[in-house]
Image (cartoon, rainbow, N blue to C red):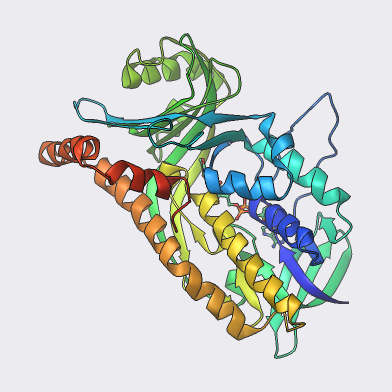
Length: 402
Ligand SMILES: Cc1cc2nc3c(=O)[nH]c(=O)nc-3n(C[C@H](O)[C@H](O)[C@H](O)COP(=O)(O)OP(=O)(O)OC[C@H]3O[C@@H](n4cnc5c(N)ncnc54)[C@H](O)[C@@H]3O)c2cc1C
């Protein structure tokens, strides 16, 4: 069977991009390895695939894209705005604060439950006639020639062979497609795992997002729907995760949060189940080759320290959409290799800035050397006092300046 476009991987990026393409009247076949759930009202948003226990901080730009897709009204139900961001380091006096009001924006972004994002995206995809979704199908071969890219995939006992003008590989950090095409990747293991959960505090969150650098790792606390619920992402040293996971460690975990945050959030009263995610940076050496383009984590997986990974992927997807819409309008080849290389080139600056920023923050704040602590403190103070720096950083964080 010959298609125009096949997307491999129906995670956050694959589903979002499929909806962008469909909105632009470009049909697509979407292949996802995991069998998606059927939603019912008893279990509003079950965890599955990449729609797990995590909450994502969506930048203003990502929110705008979902608004353009007409999805924001449905997403908003499980999202909450960030009106202030506080950055501090445990044991230091420096503090950086960004306020939406001061920067004259309605919010810096919105925190959304991934599982709810999954439900809304998937429901839309299932209703969209221009998207042919096949789940429970594992892509096992990818080759290409001048005229088309060819995929083999296994669904149960059945083997599917599909050809397409363009293959978009959105199959995650360990991308099968990337490997099948012989594209190398530079890998840096941060030797950390992110502990992820939801907690309840005695003080309302007031729509404030906290990033607190501690000797255990950079702890992010983000506001969630419900005044007292907050999302926790806490990267800690790999190998120490057993100390934090499991119901028997609930109190120990709450105590550690309390010690690290002090009383800014009041008392940490309750914790949900903790999940853990290994953290590494994986950067593909090429993002476009022939008729295949890598998207999402398959192209660049970064540390979640500043909540930028998915937002960067959304900006990539949006730019790719622009190139494909232009090709479609000209009735030109959607898998044109030159066009894909141009797309890749156009995205490098934004990608490298975000990748470098997140990596430097992790490395810069991991070192507990007292001299470096003073430098970090000076940096946080400078952030507060140097005119013009806040709007610049805020615009980058919101994804409005690429
Ligand atoms: C703890 C944590 C917190 C984060 N918080 C934020 C945040 O606040 N803000 C932000 O912007 N980003 C955040 N990120 C980053 C964000 O989660 C990722 O950028 C995003 O999940 C990437 O999605 P993806 O669709 O590219 O990959 P994935 O989610 O990995 O999806 C890949 C999909 O491909 C499928 N697949 C794989 N192989 C095959 C195959 N052979 N055949 C068919 N299908 C296949 C998989 O089943 C999967 O569904 C965070 C990351 C972590 C780890």
